[in-house]
Length: 573
Image (cartoon, rainbow, N blue to C red; front, side, top):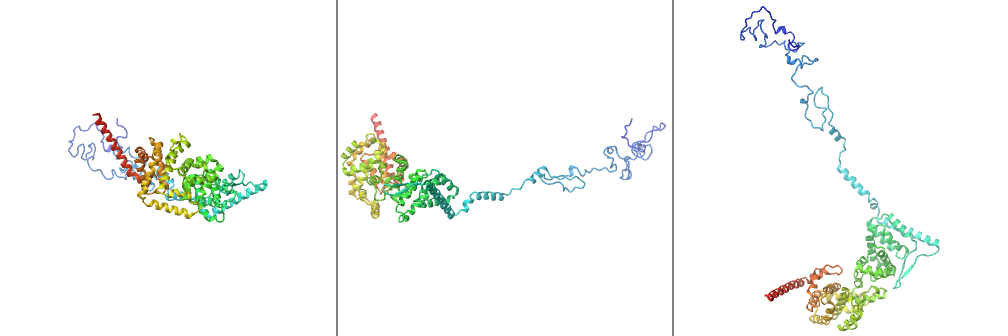
């Protein structure tokens, strides 16, 4: 049986019909009328090997009667006459390989369905562009907007706001006083006769002043000027007590601004003293209140008044603090601040005895290291070593004699006395200097500078050694075999050398004297070289002057130790 669809229609043209009476003889294959060729009617596939007529497979024929079997399944019903090996126009073979971010709508293909952009391309198109310049501008605008008030405020505007605030505080305080019918302003009289107002008794006014001052939003660059203006405006007014509380409203900037304001006020005191004779006492009130509130420290005040500037301003501050905070508080504060009271006296008018007199006159004798003052007075009364030793044994507690503070006071007094008798006689004449005479102070300073620059004479150096030998036994009695106390003696020498203005050659000369007379041993010298102690000034310059000698001393000690080891080895052998 023959499957339908395999043999094309019109098969009678290709396959001759079978007749039973046909001859059984077969025609040769290569003959013209054979199986594959020839024009005879008995051919199996007539004209298979020959070229078919043009119209046989032409596009004009319908029905596909003459198509080979392999094309029948591929022929679609709508285009039975068109069979092409070319790929369809919408085939993926003909699509260009474009990037994903580009649109594929314009591919140049006619009749194909346009494709939209890739999803990632759509997402990228939705994101806003990044403009770096715009971001920087926005940041700068934000930075400018923060201190907008500071940029707009001027110095004149800030001063005007402070004046308005002080006026309002004065009005409030005055109104309350009128309502109460009493005056709440108290004045305190200093030991020198000066009067300082202490303000009213309204407990709520400081907090109100602090909030109001903080609300002014004063820029940092004008804060010190604003406080200085307020200090000068309230020198003789009760509002002066409110200034520390107002400065505290600015927290970390308040203390530094308060100190800067005080320094500005210090510079104007000389001009104000003609109109206000008590201006120093009034300014001392500002300083004392700032110290009591913790805005500034006593060391800050001492640093702003070096070498006795604006004397006796610092002593007036101590007087007010002793009265308001108490003696114990002031003594502890001075100890922590490590303030050298003698250096705050005017140049040419210093010394332990002079310092004792000044402090006693102002009611501050409790601040004086009485031991040093008493030692100095004993030396002036009877400078013999025996009398001094007897006085120390009878007047100074035995436990106190083993303290570095006692050794520091003893060595300082002895050094001052010996130097005053030999190479620096001005050290003994400062007690007769007049505190109110500027000419005497200047002449003493000039004399001291000349003495420092000039080299001592040989006779002076010999006398210096001779006097030290008189006190050799006394110093050995308190320093012998005590390296810690010997170190205190070296620091006393360093401190005195620093206070005298670093006289050339003096420190090295005394180091050699103390070593030769066996008052201070090698261990203490080397300990002093390596020790770091900020309590005693001038260590850097001191090392520069004696470093070469200390190096020699260290090498000599090492050689001595080696010699001792060699001797011990020989003895063992």
